[in-house]
Image (cartoon, rainbow, N blue to C red; front, side):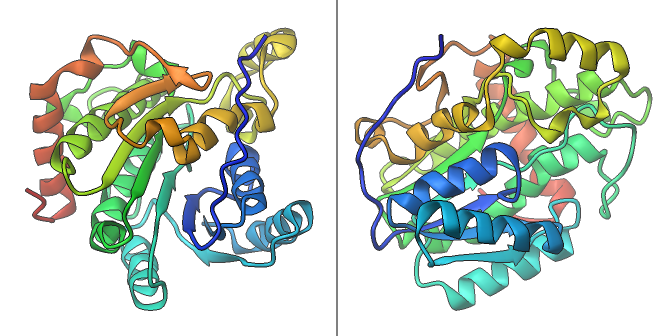
Length: 291
């Protein structure tokens, strides 16, 4: 039912950072890429859960070159500390997988005052990518993989109220953040043309993961009924792995993928002008200059 993809591509001597690697798709991605010989840096908010996941990834992959590092994407101070550590200690980062996310959660704000979903899913990864970009550019050929969702199709970017302060609808805020992931990928790919760094966005599939924890009972029941049609985390991770390692994607950049193949994204996701305006707003809100 799911188009599976397999490749024996090796990643020996490569370094991979995966955000939110202690659970679900992130953990499965870590295991798969570790099996391919990569050095894996699991960037996680919860250090206790990360330690348990670290052991699991090492055991499942037989690769001991796996480490965890604390990263809270809801706090720019934590993001800067994480990036500083990576820039100081790692000589290369060949693959960055912006995987962590929050989904349809109750209204909350990040340490920087951003609505939680746009804050973690978009702003946090935007800042992280910016802070690691010089090192990634020195590690070419390199890839940046942004985990989005088909939920982007129901999203619009509200530049006037990006933090949903006027009214909050958790589904709309989630869709907005996932649309932002694709717009960011397009803009990033354009800026990286000719550098040897490529960027990809993807929909992992409807996956049985902890992201469901904020769904209400009827929604959880619907998901339960849909279980035969949803993917395990290992299946859900396949498109992330595909975007990270598929040799045929080396010359592609800025596109959107689902089920290990190019996919159609919404009209809104192809709006270059909105992508540019979102880029400028993100820079302003994060107090960075990224031309």
